[in-house]
Each structure stands twice: as structure tokens, then as C-alpha cells.
Amino acid sequence: MEIKTVKGFKDILGEEATLFEEIENKAKSVAQSFGYQPIILPTVEQSELFDRSIGNTTDIVEKEMFTFEDKGGRILALRPEMTASVARSFIEHHLETSALPLKIYYFGQCFRYENPQKGRYREFYQFGIEAIGDISPVLDVEVIQVAFEILRHLGIKDLKVKLNSIGCRTCRPNYKNLLIEALKIHYDELCNDCKKRLYKNPLRILDCKKESQELKESLPKMVDYLCTDCRTHFEKVKTILTQLGIPFECDPNLVRGLDYYSKTVFEVVSLELGAQNALLGGGRYDYLIEDLGGRSTPGVGFAMGIERLIEVLKKRNYTVNKLPKVYIVYDQQFITFANEIREIISKEYVVELDPKGDNIKKGVERASKRGALLVFIIGENEANNNAITIKNMKSGKQITVKREEMLKSAKELIEDD
Image 1 (cartoon, rainbow, N blue to C red):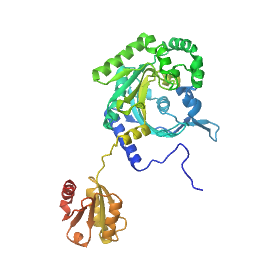
Image 2 (cartoon, one colour; image 1 turned 90 degrees about the vertical axis):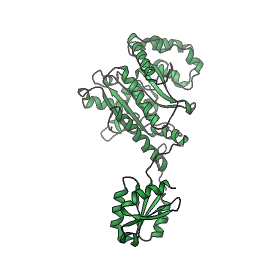
Image 3 (tube, rainbow, N blue to C red; image 1 turned 60 degrees about the vertical axis):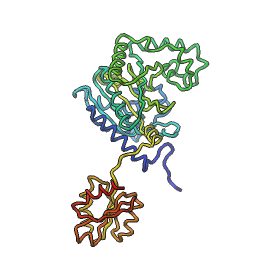
Image 4 (cartoon, rainbow, N blue to C red; image 1 turned 135 degrees about the horizontal axis):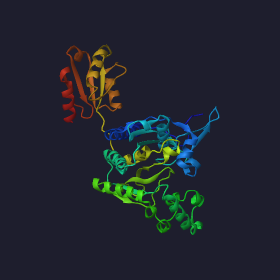
């Protein structure tokens, strides 16, 4: 029987693997330029971590978690997201004693048991940043800035922030009660999931794709019931975004799908992508660390799904700037010479050494199959004269030059093409 990948999981090969590396490298570079440092987190956590942080009435915990009992009888879970793991690490390693705000970024796999579809798998990758330890709205905006810069570096245009405030534990309870009362009248119109959410988690109804826009528009808006502190914070976020020229629009139905969010929530969208235009999302989580047993410590961050970005970049025919490939073909007796050449040119080219060294003609044929732009040929004549023959595989043009001239000549041969 042929063994294949498990449903919802996939191999990442060829162009996709190259795009994965491109996104990861650009995202890390931008985050580092804003002063964020890496954190590497375990894939498996205690299931309770996500029950307590994400919320046991959310779809993720109720329907999508990969949980299992280990040999010690502990209930463990493959992480469905990474902010909760960051919070757990912050508490466990007493990072509140470090210089705050702690600014970190992560990249890694997450797991959710949902129906696989294009761009969404049961194993998926996320990049995200977290700024922990300061309530300042400046950090809310900085997190959005980092997101914008990453997407701009990937060539995605017409970016805009969808923004909302979902209040805090002072003002949100009153709003929830108002929302429940308003929704009771429409109970029979709600989808089955939202009927269950009505009393447990009514804010999630605002985010449900099955409910009509007309119904959502008729409901009370959280921004109209913010306490003074939340309103002030939200206004400062909007003011700073305006000052920095970052386009945004307020969306009263944006709540995000995780219980730990408070105050600012946002998504970054691209207007060039049509209806399915959300690229990443995040927000503030000022109670999460306290709820997990740590000191009261505010935080804000975002996460973006790499598979979603891959689909966007492929549709836009995004090309990764790669170093040209050189393939070195040589007579076996000159392998030392060939390796010396590889070492010299490897900083400017991707270099492959022919593994056989048996026949120059066959070696050039192998170079063609492996997509080489240039072939460096080292036969007896070249070795005896400390020279290299360079062939442009696209144009067919071929020159023989002295070893000390090969880098300059190779560049000219590419430019003349």
C-alpha cells in the first residue's frame, strides 16, 4: 500500500517552498528592524492553556483542537495559535523582570482540525509579533506598522487597516447585555452556531459570515458604549494612524475570534484582492497573562497565515530574486581546482559542482537540466593555463578567460545576453 500524507497536511515543495522562505526572511528582517527578537516555542502545550486563553466557547477550542492524552495521563494539544504560548512562556520564565515592553516575533506551525480547502490546511504556518508590558496606543500602531512594512516588502499594494475597539472588562459586560437583548428578537433568524453563542459569546455573532449584514447593522455598536479609558485609547490609535498616513476604516463588526482580545482589534486588508482581502489580524490582550496566572501585564500583537500569503503572491506572479546558478563541469583529475573555483564564486552565485566529473559534454547536459545560467568548464587545457571556460546556457555564447578575470567576465557574459 502506498503511504501518503494525512488529510489536511501537505508537503511544501519547489516554488512554494521558495516563497515560504521569502516570506519568512522578509518578515523576520522587518520585525528585527523595529527591535523585535525571536522566540521559538514548543509545538505541544497543555490543552488547558488554550481552554483558558482562547476561550472554551470559541470554534477553535470546541471544534478544531488536536488534543490527546499522553502516557502520563496529561491532556495535551497541538497549538492552534501562538499568542497563548508566548504568554505562557512570559509567565514561566519571569520575563516581566526584563526590560519592557518585551518585543518578540515567532514563526512556526499551528494545527486546527477544520475542513481542508485551498490555502487552509490542518497544519499551517504563522508569523507573528508580540509587544508585551505597555498599555501605550503607540505600540498598537507600531504593531500595525510592522504588518504594513512586511506586506509592502512583498509587493502587496492598496493596503488598509480595518479597526475596532471591543472595550474592556469595565464596559464590555454592559454592551454584551444590550447585544443579547437586541438579538433575542431575531433568535429564529440566527444560524445554529449563533443560537448557541447568544448567551455564551454574543460578540462572535457580529463576526459570523452566515448572518445578514442588515441584521448586524441594526445591532448596537460597541464603540458607542466604550468607557472613558477605552474611548481615549481608541481615539489615540486613530490619531496616530492618521498622523503616520496609514489608511484605516472603523468596522464595528470586527471582533476577531479569540476571547482574550480587549480594546484594539484590527485586520490588514488589500483592496486589490477583492472580497477575500484579509491578510492578517491581531489586537490587544491586556488580561491574557493575568488570566493565565501571571501579573497584570498588557500586550498587543498580530499573526499572519503564511499559506494565505502564498496564494496571494502566486496570483500576483511574485518572483523571488535569486542568485544566478553556476554549474561547474570538470575532468575528475581537476576536482581540487573545481572546488577552489566554487569557493571563490559562491558569494555571488548559487554553485553546483557536477557530481560525476566523467565527461564534459554530459556534464553540460546535466547543467541544462538543473537550470544553470552559466557553466564553468574545467578541462585539461583550462587547468594547464589557470583558465576557465564560461558558457551562457541561454545564449550559447562561450568564452575562455584567466582565473583572476572569471568573476568580471561571467558578469559581462550575463549582461550581454
